[in-house]
Image (cartoon, rainbow, N blue to C red):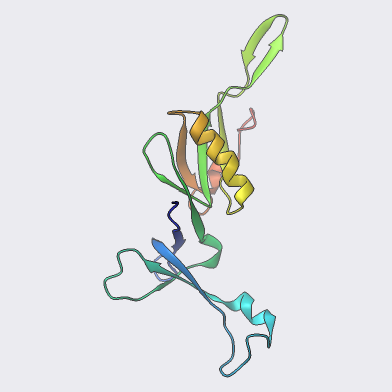
Length: 152
């Protein structure tokens, strides 16, 4: 059975918190759940930490919340979450004049919280032994997404 776990950056110190996700809608007191859907956009996102000693959930920045996709990278055994950037040693070939030339020895993929993306990442991790590695995430390492002349 796959572990269900989330992470998010704390609003108080910008550190990662890992655990269960709780979304508390910002509804006025005594209002009906059906009253004003717009209030849900102002919801409070909380992570109840795995190692919580005081039993308190921690408020996190909603845009940084990512779910564990149930895989670890092949290099360090690091868990892979939505928002992570995974590099793998791929092989894309060009055939010119009877010769094979490697075009892109490395590629990256951004892990999203979409299930279809998880299948792509799963294929990379499972079928590229010792080749897939979490190299950062879109929140702390946006420069990794810029690319180079080879499309990396």
